[in-house]
Image (cartoon, rainbow, N blue to C red; front, side, top):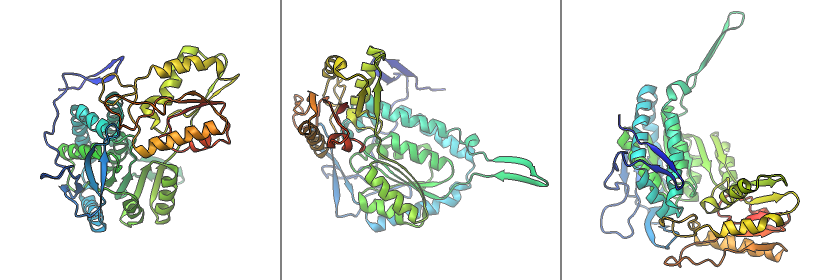
Length: 429
């Protein structure tokens, strides 16, 4: 049996040289022809098709501002075709034995392992995170695919005999039908893999909307899913922004919606989709605090604060935005600054990079304005990373590690940091 062996080292997880080679040579999800930049296709009914949309969105490399591809704003007719393809595929797919669906997932996880480097390279190009972080992005999603491989037992119901005189109880788990997923930009492989592998292995069919900022990983994962044997129409992909999101919330054929993203979008999706009778789960913003007691282990605490505060450029829902030091932050500040300064800010493709750029110029500007508002409100700047310049990547959306002290709960920089993503500042109070 061919196995991909995972190695752990100081530089993070890496794929063994013995793993299978990259599976796909060409990207069928990109439009053919001489168009530059290339256009990303839709996946409808098992075919990658070029959209007829008149409007497109540029997918930009955040380290260089290079436009690497363009996605269409899916038309209403194309969206309907994707949903119809999923609905048509559902009866046959739900009748497919769960063992058959599992075998497709076994093949799928093998293909993902073989293509992890290729997926990571795409993530770094479109999202900006370091290759090490991008590799971890794929690996965490792969764990969900591996979990789906056990669906034969996970989907079992229950039976209890004689719960009352002459009465037995049964619980049976059945697929719902067409499900949909709406993804954010920060984990372009992991979050799609949170969604459709479990849904389809349970017998549902799926319509996925990747982030318009970095759709490539989702398209590559869809291509691999088709190669693994997923039947036509079981997985479909549409692109777009708020109009497509609203279509997902409103279409009566879609029975359930999963969302990961900001509070504002999540509340809108939950309200609109649930009002239309759908089952909805929304994973939204987080407000993460670390409380450091005087007897905390110094070295372990410093390492944890740096990793949690600045890892992935702060663009993850569990990023640490606030640290509360019991007894004051002053005894910790010098060493925190020293360790934060030691982090290498560079293009995610650089072998020594600890931090890549944030996703967009708008995100960088927002971070800078929040830091400035904190200073103007009385916070003390301990380390300022707003003016960092990365050689050879002067146009990149880079923000260096930034530390604010003496922050109060009524300051705008504190209140806004409750929002998910792109807040690249560790606060101390």
